[in-house]
Length: 127
Image (cartoon, rainbow, N blue to C red; front, side, top):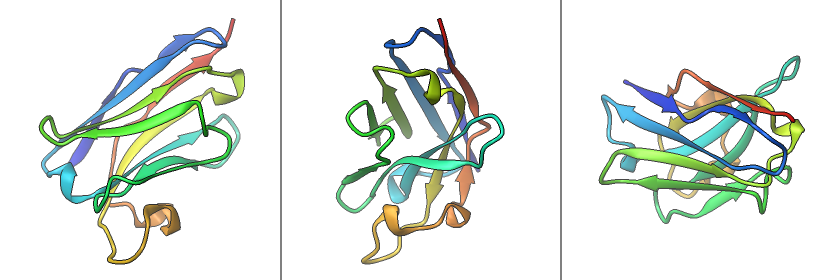
């Protein structure tokens, strides 16, 4: 079971990209979902997540107001719409699925708890 990612690429500052992840071997609707990123020379960090219980979302301060996480249960997919991109958004982006824990939001969980991961897709923001 894993995610298959697509949608990365090279974009100019101020531009937009949409990342997609298709779940394979499991039903993503039953999981909390998250997007992580890892910039060159830095540790992987959480960017956003969405709870399966009520579709409430969380965004890191660095992406709040610019990124939007969503899920399409019918297609077994998740997305990250990114706009007003900055050079500091350059990173490999990973999608992931997390078994929900009753009474706990995805923002309160650790990256190590995620069950399924995508292979990563490169996003480069440069002029």
